[in-house]
Length: 465
Image 1 (cartoon, one colour):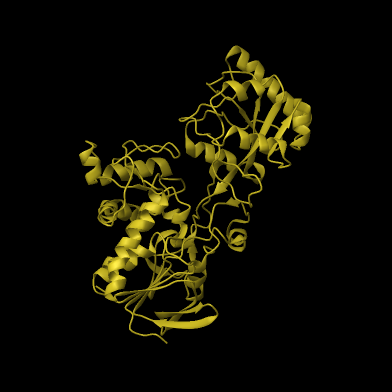
Image 2 (cartoon, helix red, strand yellow; image 1 turned 180 degrees about the horizontal axis):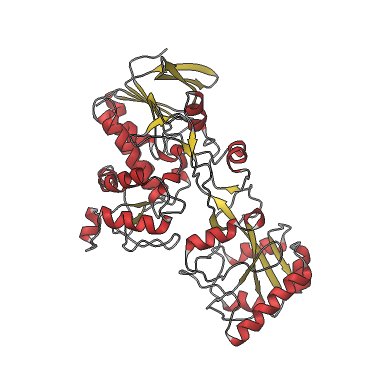
């Protein structure tokens, strides 16, 4: 048994490191426990976009912005959903989190706020792109905790998975963990769960959503926090909230995970191709500019997938669809990956994609007729060319998950709560462990990372005060 800690932070990722660093800076004795062999969590996969309103960087760029405008934008984009109190709390605290990151050595490029076209746009540029994606934050995190480790205020436990929360008389008092097969028991006055979501757990996806989509995740993020909270008497929330990201593709020989290897955002590249579902039918205007509408359209398709269809003329004349080199793309179409299909006729293409041949050929014929006269049945505006001359191409795209909307239910002080809404004394949570459902049923640019950093710092600054 190791006593003497004030706070135990479980998970050294996006929220956990800021929590531990802030608590240690106050002179508290902190244990930071991480299942992986290094800090950072899902930041190794993150683009590192962060949003905040009313920052020094905005003022330097001549951008007028404030929390009220940010909150109004969030309400517009998420259609009034989410937990408005937590959402507002994040927005008001976010500028201070940006300041802390800058003080810790974080850099962004350009050194000013931008609009982020991969999500529905704010009315004001307030997203900051990390210079080296998530690794820029990890570098800043190392800088932030190094002095506390050297001073003895922070002890870092790597390759240590927490198996249980020690609860005594209804109060969280520590954790039971394992390190290389050896049990470790740590005691403290408060426990903070910042273990991330459950992207790596097929079981939790099936239990909560009834589906297991392609997921962009790391293997150590398997819902440990949610499992620990449940064992301690906590519960989950936002279980009915789900929204995929639009248009991931599988890499050649890659495991069952999707990511964005094509330029499929209309504000960046207008589509020359058409999208058809497994039934061989179009289901949306391909140039739909509202990202939220695109994401909801893919969620209505069977197995969250669709085919991007084009011909040889489009391949040669259109701006490049793929981010890959032509040589790699040729390997994909010459190989045996069922997600990349090339055929001499539309009929052969449909057969190889396992779509109804008649339905598919009629879909393409109908599109070509509308394209010829400049009037598309889905009201698509960008109609540069028909799909008429082989060989023909089909690339399977997916709705995929990069995050989890459900998570540990917390109150507005980030205390873990039970199904009755009562807080479990001494047990707190932040970051993706609480899910992103409180941000609303949408994607707010830069909000996932920003809210995790912000709420991690909030706990580190306020617990045991």
